[in-house]
Length: 402
Image 1 (cartoon, helix red, strand yellow):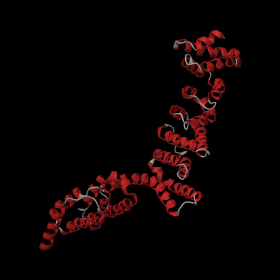
Image 2 (image 1 turned 90 degrees about the vertical axis):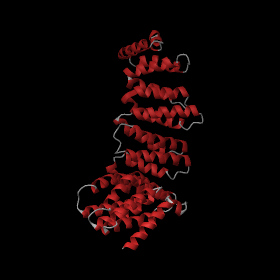
Image 3 (image 1 turned 120 degrees about the vertical axis):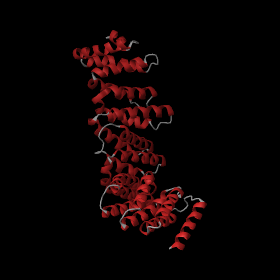
Image 4 (image 1 turned 90 degrees about the horizontal axis):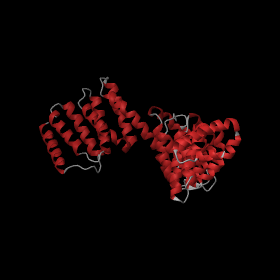
């Protein structure tokens, strides 16, 4: 088989490809002898700078035709610690062509890569991260169970570097995988929330990012069903951290819950804004306006992207024919102004409307109520001095003419 060894490492790609096909035929007749004589030679060639690239491609050619038979002889030899930079590169390259057979070797490959992601050598860190990302992306539906099991095991490891690496890969997997991951999300959310109380600050930071990515992968309509899950996970984490000050625990609980609630708010807002613009009875509009006011108070700054839409909607409702709708819109507009960094454009719009509608008391009353709320809730938001003068002058004129 000496000539075959030479061909599988030959410099010309087409020769190596033909040798890979020939290996399949050879395996049928020689069985394990073909693997025992050829694979070790290729693995040895990986350690030689002159032949490493062609040897790696040779292994890929063999894997492409006899994956199941060859993998058990390759991966165990490549994951011997400490991992070298080239071995890490080889793991990532071979994972791409391993196909379904990769699933059964994740317990061998992934722990080694997670460990290498925390290595002191920056080049090894980078290569291990890239190889782990490759492994995560090539996993098929049947391999998800194996991958999740290894990531959960890593998230509970005694070494902070492995917990951190696992958290990163969880976030990466949920953000970039094309597989259906909704069924796996609850377990991962609970795991990451518990990691948010980790003693290692770097792990906490990575876990936050991963949690955001996992939540972001969940369909928005399913998010409300996760609220109890989050509350329970926070409670579990809090109970494990009894030594911390009470105010720290409360802050932690609020921060974790807010991350999920903000996504829920965004999901609720769009249909509410759309419905209130349709021709529904005033009772429906009033109920929606009251709900939006509550959500604004709860969601805070996370709802700032909706500010232009909400402001336009509320101003339009100030001219509704029903007083209850107008009053609800004025109240909501006042609360909304707390989210704005500048209220002067809004005040200008309200002043202009007031000048037009002041003679119609029903509308003027709503606009004045809205102005009162804006000035009350705006706080430190910037407002031009001349606007204050215009407002005082207009109010004085209205008072004298009434």
